[in-house]
Length: 184
Image (cartoon, rainbow, N blue to C red; front, side, top):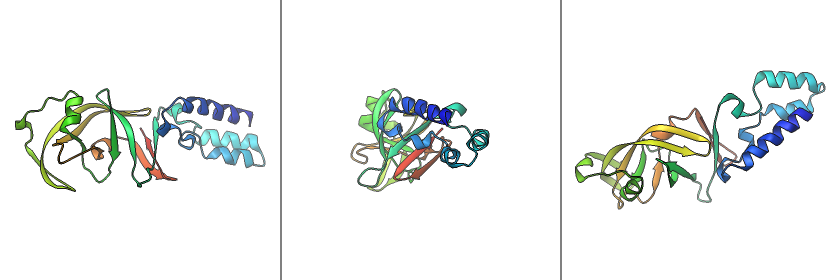
């Protein structure tokens, strides 16, 4: 029991240094911890729980981030794209990450009019887009390389959408208690 308390305390110390969206301890602590405390033979239950799966995802190399649901029912968070901070709305209905031309300029992507060769359908209608490759996207402890993205005109897209070209590179994601849990 003392070992479990120590491990949970260590996880809390690690988590307290993370951004607000990466602080959900349930993503890091095994659900078997409660079973260990309530078991008639805690030592045997603890051995079984530890053998079944580790208490912290960091022990297995898995990185996690948790994004709380906004009041409007969406999941938005601060991402780092190519080393720059960008606020993004997670949209699993979008095939690609989508950024507007202003954001593309801030990320150092130099695009010419001739780069806008694709037609994409958005909630606002059909528009032209440029397909680009983003070097790196990060959220919390998660880092993903080589993400395809569309750049749309500022009039067609007012904010950044984090689509499936990023989400599909994660190990998993799920909604749990109004939080989007991302694992990589």
